[in-house]
Image (cartoon, rainbow, N blue to C red; front, top):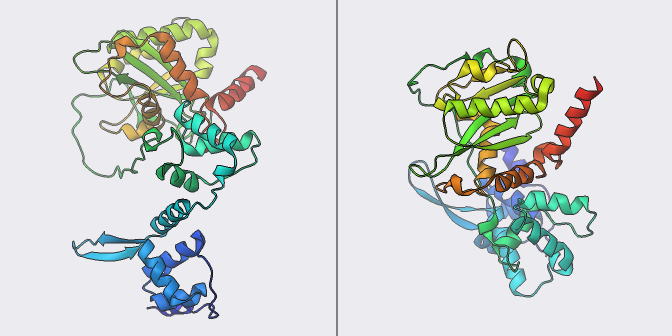
Length: 358
């Protein structure tokens, strides 16, 4: 054990009897990972060694090392989960159990409105509800089955962050236009408005002819979702033409750039960027590197939200325009952590007001 770890473990000697808090458990996990003994942990937390031994049993799990050997380790989260469950079984009053209105609101937002637990808590806070629980606590309540309808099946699937510095794959065909490498720092930084990512969401292979054209504004995360008749380049151009007709001269201010992948539906570079209303181009089109969907990260996240409503393998032909519009509205009114729990509509409307004020 290093000198710094030794002195860290030696803080405090007077032992008292008390229940460990979650913060204590995190400290215990940290100390044990630093090779402190249970006696050292007991001294640091000012509790008996017996308390630490009992606590260790609550959070013990088997960890597989890189050499495939196994080691018993302690998890603060696991210990807290088991403690909460034991207290619930004893009938200890839960914070959320004293406020049924709060519990029902959270359940409704997650089950009926498709919010994440964090988003539901943020909305409850904005309404000024008296009761407050943390995101971790709410997840534990759900995990222990404390709600009538709300179970883990309603929770968004957690994804692992990918390391994109790996395989070099050969692109089957060249991009039709400018590479993303030519995109300006202004676009890359996400500090300015009017830069979009565009993708398609496809339905059941071999069955669905239509698909969804999805545009995501990079700063505000505002979504435009349109059902188009097929996955052809002509249909994509036709939808952009409709948008330009509707927006008029504002189109070029709203759509300064659009970044796409190398799918065949985006192969008509010239007609995607040219304007119907005036000479010259209506926007700039940039193409991602092959097999690099992470370069359209906002688009990819949007597609995951769409899949909550239209799972993979579904026939998109059976969904009408009204249903597609409802998905778009839900996404644009969804409170987002990255925006301080404001919605994409909130930020988008603010940017539009700036444009009209110029």
